[in-house]
Each structure stands twice: as structure tokens, then as C-alpha cells.
Length: 115
Length: 114
Image 1 (cartoon, helix red, strand yellow):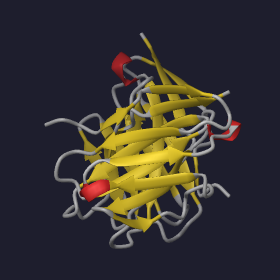
Image 2: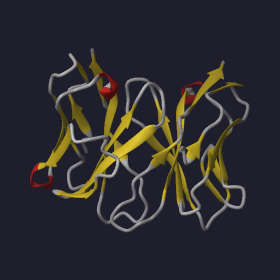
Image 3: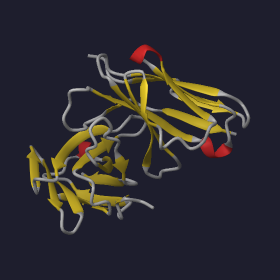
Image 4: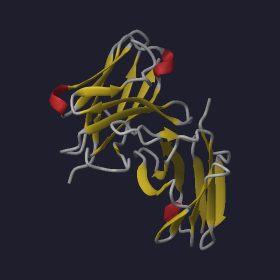
């Protein structure tokens, strides 16, 4: 069974540009989460989808970040325009809807560098 | 305001000895706790978890202890092996059906010395 995949693995952009990150969860997982780790700090929650609906987006830093999950399958996270403080590693995680406790499966992450 | 704290950024342990990683939390609503292991350039991998109704959970070489009154948990690895060298993250969630987002600590880098 394929795990969570993320694309690209690395992205280097200039301040003011736009970047779109993609996450493909494990097939059949209704829950999809985005997290971010900045400069060796803690991994912070950004938002949570259940199928195609946003369940919780309380962790989104500001309106420069837009997340979508088309048809309840893959998800994209767009940053527009990117700022220096957006640099970090963006992780996607997924879990099945039937799971009682929250053991989330993480992807390898996308390392974003904003210059 | 960090709700999950791992106060030791790094820890070195001799191979074969016990590794003890610690984690403290402040939010009394947390009722489920997890440990994740992370290798460089990879995502976190689930290791072991514990519900707040228990005080111990064991899985092979890994044991997690929970002290609710002290809001403290620890991960014991015995015996430690070179492959255990990684960053370990403590995470917690408050089971709110429909959204179990994880709150992470900053991680502890464990180095096993051969």
C-alpha cells in the first residue's frame, strides 16, 4: 500500500512569488491534515479536511494560504504571495475516518525556502 | 504558548542501555498521547501511543508512561540500538470527534553511541 506522498520535495522561490504544494493521502483516508515545521521548532497544525470539507483551519497563518481538496482525494496548499517567514517544511498527514484514536500517517514533507 | 514541551533538545545514550525521553503538557483536555520518530528528510513515523485512561503502554522495546497528575509522559527504549538514532516528537490530542489535530513538542534528538 502506498503511503502519503507530497510534491515537490523541495521548492525555492523568491519573496512575492506563488507556490503550490500537493499532497496525496493514503487511498481511502478521509482525514487529511497539513502541518508545518519552521526552523527546527515544533510541528504546527495548519488545517484539517474531512473528505472535501474543511473541518478546522484554525492553524492557517493568514489569508495568503489557501488549501483545497478536490473531490476528497488529493489536496493542494497554495501560498500567494510568499513571504520570508513562510520558509519551513510542510507535512501532510492522513488517517482513516473509522479510526478511534488519531494515529496519523505522515508524508515526507515539502521543504519550502523563500528568498 | 507551547502546550507540549520537550525540554531536552538532545540526548546521547550508549548502545544497549536505556533511553528515556521526557515530555510535559499543560492542556488538561489532552486525552491521547503519541510518540513519533523522525529520520532526516523523512516524515514523522508513528511509534507508540497511550490513552489517558492508562498509565503505561508497552510495545516491544518501547514503553510509554503517563503521569496525569504531573502532566508528564516519558518514552523508554530498552535496549537502545543504533537504528534508534533519530528525532523523537511527543504529540497530544484532545479527542473532539471529527477533529483530532495533533499538538507537537519541539523534539528530542536521540543519538545512540555504538
